[in-house]
Length: 346
Image (cartoon, rainbow, N blue to C red; front, side):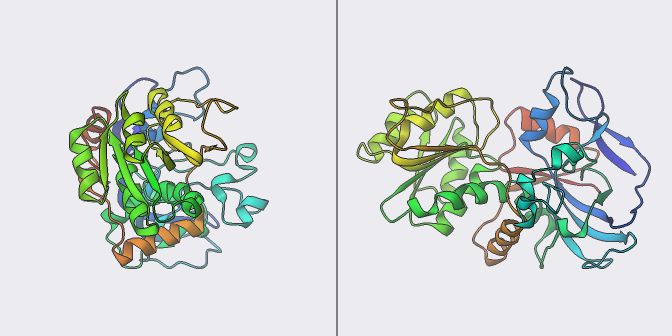
């Protein structure tokens, strides 16, 4: 089968031919209908050789949907031909966090060498994907594969982040979304669907700010050195009750902290390397800062249900598997408006 692999540190990913996988006991083989392109992959491919955590070559793609092509011995709960989405942050399935469906916070994944597809394990940017356990599959329930595949990360991750702050997003409150690309433009829709808060979107790109307005942002602000002051002005000096930073670079993290209201939340989702000092005098009183990771299995069900209701949709552009390297080039250059989706089987 064809697959897109990161094969050499510092090199561009390549489309190669690899053996077709076969499901062992408990495993499920999917014929991949759609795979999502994510900035996290670019971050992985920018890491130096020293301490690189995954064996190479690595088949990319941690967002995947497909149809069940074959079942390993003992598999129950799915049948051949089922259309499913893949829950990406695989865990051990038995620790205290996994028992709650929070495999994104599995306590033993590192110890046991369990990695998500595309982030250590072979990923979805291939004609076929081997899934370790049927519990990591969620029925699409009629959703279009292209529309659904970004929801497994670009929908699930902001949904998990936003749920934590919903008690603070009461009428009259303000939520800020920094970075209105792949995850951010979904976060805006989630905030509009789940809360009465005013949503303010920040980005450096006029095109992405236009997308932010289109998907429901009440206000848009250029993400520059004046951004925190602009948010303070919009809120009468109070600041935002919740700030979600989907960039995570040093300048955006600093802005997020500066615009947070007393008792507000700052949630750093992006992995741009920025950090935020926490301590008396650094932030407004009792600001809470978190850096969440992905979301739970149950939350993926909830995100897909929101999509079926029409409350959230993802702006996508599609590419063939042969053109997947081009999709990564365009993402790296900031030319993807929304989310790129690869169609490995046409």
